[in-house]
Amino acid sequence: MVSRITTVAFQGVDARPVDVQVHITPGLVGFFIVGLPDKAVAESRERVRSALVACGMAMPAKRITVNLAPADLPKEGSHFDLPIALGVMAAMGAISADAVAGQVVLGELSLDGQLAPVSGVLPAAMMAVARDEGLICPKACGSEAAWAGETLKVLAPGSLLELANHFSGRQILSEPKPGMRAVNGPKLPDLADVRGQESAKRALEIAAAGGHNLLMVGPPGSGKSMLASRLPSLLPPLSPREMLDLSVVCSLAGELEAGALSDQRPFRAPHHSASMAALVGGGTRAKPGEISLAHNGVLFLDELPEFSPQVLDSLRQPLETGQCHIARANHHVTYPAAFQLIAAMNPCRCGHAGEPGHVCRRGPRCATDYQGRVSGPLMDRIDLRIDVPAVTARDLSNPAPRETSAEVARRVADARNRQAERYDEPSTPCLNARASQSAVEAHVDLDDGALRLLSDSAEQANLSARGYFRVLRVARTIADLAGSQPVQRVHLAEALSYRTLDSDALMAA
Image (cartoon, rainbow, N blue to C red; front, side):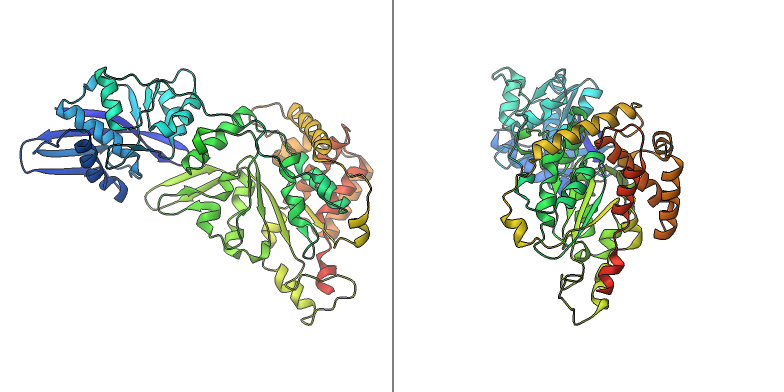
């Protein structure tokens, strides 16, 4: 007799069904797992054996063969423990095969039979909903699985023995509830804490309203990191669809705490020593990286030139497409990566190029070499480039009232609502930064004077075609903040001022 249990294998954010087939026959005693298992799956033999013994069941002195079908799909992770154990129990007659029919099963077993939490429960639950099946997962993951839908029947035992007792009728497992939704979450830093830097605050507001990428260049201590950390307080909460998309990625990365989902947009700030696999994703199991964990949120790269040039250049494609494609010899995976890039850097290695009274002993080469670590193609994808000068003592002692994040967030929300109404087609992005070229041409109608200004400025600044349309997108966002339907010359002039950061002046300092 062959028992069958359904589980999952992950390819990117997609969960693919895997048929766990268990066959017990007379012959040479052994426990064999076939079907491209990795090391963690192969080690399931010992965990399953010990867990069954802890539950009072001995392994039969026969040949046990476990096949994971389809056989050409790589099987990775410890979540295969529970389906293998249930398959063995069903083949032995310890549980009824009907009890596990129509169930998607995943979970890691401890040696004493307890079930440990595993990653990827949310996408597995969504697959179960699509197949109109139930889900069996560890108790610690039950609240996460319950988010997949009210129609999903979830069993979340704490141990293998509890599950066996439930099947035999000696114990009834209650259905888990969705984890607490952190509507408010931790208090975010407020923009009112920032003194001075009014032009930088304005650029931050534009970046928040249109989802534009932003680069801040300034000396140490000028407030670049402080400004970037205030950006999440200006952004609207995640929509239910955005929250679910992000939670799937976080589930695969094992970063959903107690199954709780949050409507706050993510803010990821990896250290400049991060590897390409850590930032973009990859590794032996092709896990999602920081750019995917920042999906629908913000990726902050402080000390931008200190990152490896190869790592920085790997961001170019995700910035354009909003997706990250990871190719391996045996499989390809795709993770969502629609993030907003906020970067900060010093003008040179010593950090004070261009400041009055400062003369670098290395001369202009200090700034040239340092800024040259960031490639031109990556810079071309950054919409807003601003100079953040050092804060003066007058700014620090000025008691003048400053705008709070809540006040700026209201303007940002109004601008985003205008964009949502404008791009009302499902296939069209609802933010100016990700609007298609045709949408930009349709919704940015310039008069003759504005066209001449854009043409002359594009030639002087040697803008690429990408840069040309990115200027139009920023101008559209500035007009949305002003509540203006047409894009006027003043809006275009401000957008051009952010695009043409005078780095040459810094290098010549």
